[in-house]
Image (cartoon, rainbow, N blue to C red; front, side):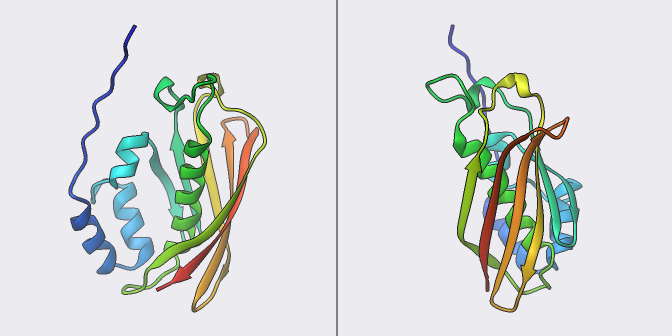
Length: 159
């Protein structure tokens, strides 16, 4: 049986422009609260920013069949996307208006496979170091009971 999903999104240029005119925490709170539209990747993957405070971010996703790879588990790219988003937002949440960032590198360790039986997943990330030119953060991908599925670290360049 064939399954399908439909994905739509808002113009990402408008969201990027808003990001440049707001402090990071204000921008991310506006996205979380629906005052600004979600980024296209959020709609494509089905993840949502649920918590944001300075130096901390949480993204959530309910694994579904469209996330599966050919061997019947959620593709590692979903874990990587969730963790990269959470860690980058932990960094972004500390930046003043007019500052930006980009991910220089990130490392992920997958510790167990994810299936739809895992239920809702949370990528929880926290800032480790916020400097003038670089920032680092760490994140964990967990289920509702706190079971670890992956953990990661990132280095971001401050622009």
